[in-house]
Length: 147
Image (cartoon, rainbow, N blue to C red; front, side, top):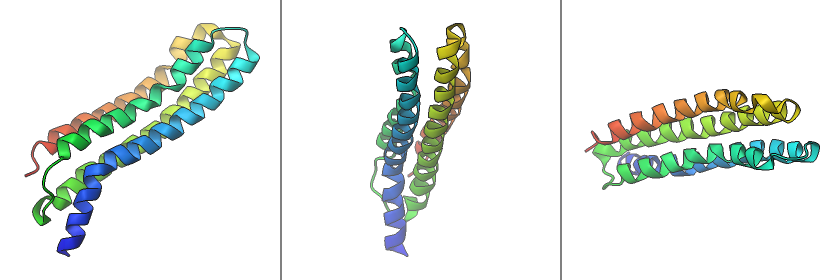
């Protein structure tokens, strides 16, 4: 049981980066595919499509910051807390990255036909980003209380 708690603790320390990177990669790939499709159908404005498709990459940055805040000796006493904070944040970052990419793909697809809505079409992705930021801040606050 002791070894399991220590292994779970180490997973929790690194889960925000690993799962956050996974969500970011999927989200950027989904949005990037939409950006490439939009570039084939439009005569300009390619930079905004590429820029928008990179937005989900912020999740891995949040994961890196929390990983550094969770860095400490993993013991049987703190393993569960590290697992819970890091693991749950990692899942939140992964899910928000994927859904943010899907939101951006929709925004890119819509704005290729109606360019004037591009800024407004990014709002759903910004709202999803807000949930990632909430989870990030919450994890930072909790990380400070782990022995």
